[in-house]
Length: 77
Image 1: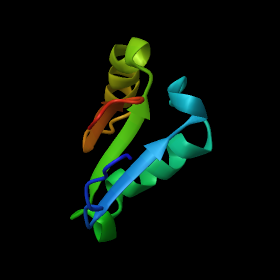
Image 2: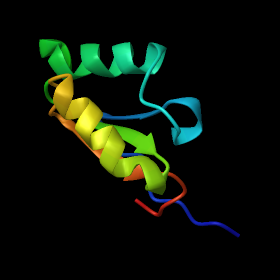
Image 3: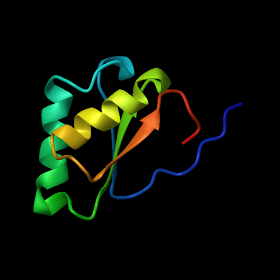
């Protein structure tokens, strides 16, 4: 049996293309959420394969997205 923690309120988790690329529609959704005042109180998480975490981080920095925490794919967090 797998135990799960309760869902956190005001938290959004986005995964794009199985954590292989931060591009595409999910990038634009993430950019909007990170800049829109109505989502300022939300915690934003973006899923990446562990091998790509550094690349995702650089990509988000280059695009001015700084309110997002990266999470490794298939990790307990």
